[in-house]
Image 1 (cartoon, helix red, strand yellow):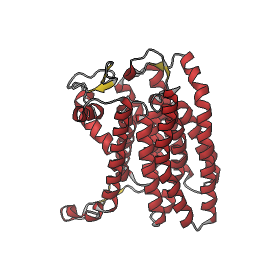
Image 2 (tube, rainbow, N blue to C red; image 1 turned 90 degrees about the vertical axis):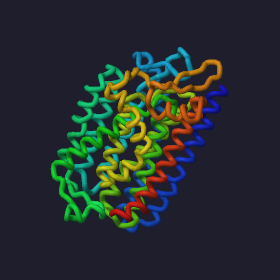
Image 3 (spheres, rainbow, N blue to C red; image 1 turned 30 degrees about the vertical axis):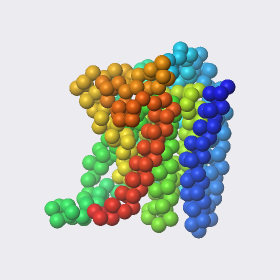
Image 4 (tube, helix red, strand yellow; image 1 turned 120 degrees about the horizontal axis):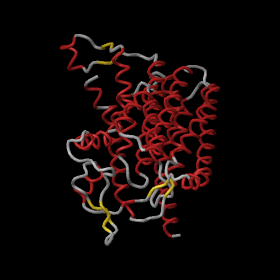
Length: 382
């Protein structure tokens, strides 16, 4: 009963910290809206998102036992317990998110081709994640299928394929912009595969996958609202905002159950869907470079993990820290190269809840620095 009470208090605190900037950002957007049609769209979006939050809260406890009955459960390795925890509950939040996005579609007046392609891509990636949870696919298969899941977005992309050349490089290249053409579509494919798999490999702690996702998504929402209120590509930024708000709602509900001590595991179903959704938000809002800035912790984790991911050094199935049963704290395993073990190596042993909080606050810090780079430092080179 004490663990449940602590989980409730901790998750509510974290969600309060996260959702406060969402509320303030939406209020700022509402104040700056002049178009009645857009005001109506925003009101419908908020109402649908609130409904999505409570629907996810309601259905996770129902689907969880069903997953266990079908063998979709796992042991919480960091606690040393044998009681199975329902896995792949990202299928609940992901399905509700897709339903809400489809319900919102009739309200949109433009950009439906890319919008539908985005839905298809997210659906394919979520299916891939669920297949991985059930079939335990090899990495080579997952990477190949990840590229295939980007096809709907690639073939329907009608945005610009030009990139702005940094000012110091203009004398060398001779142009302010370069048209990449088909190479830009290749970039989109690799970008989507990276975002999908980078969240998947920075995982293993209660609340970490959903926590990092909600922080990045809120950052993208704030960026989209800033761009919209500044009059920069309002149509594309409004489309990305429409994809962002319901995703925050469903992820927040999932995080409530996934927070320490977790009552469910999100599974690869969620991590793959989350990565693709963020990629779609960045691509539709023409903000892929900004999104990469928000992925700094994931980039660091990916870089540290490269020797194991490419088989240069042995890579165990679970690259998690070691639980010291006497102290109840997690300790670094020096042969497991990732950001989680790096924090333990630098800061010393700590509890799972404390370690997850450290990683998430690092994510917040990096995202704040990303805003500084995007809106101040970038003016020096663009």
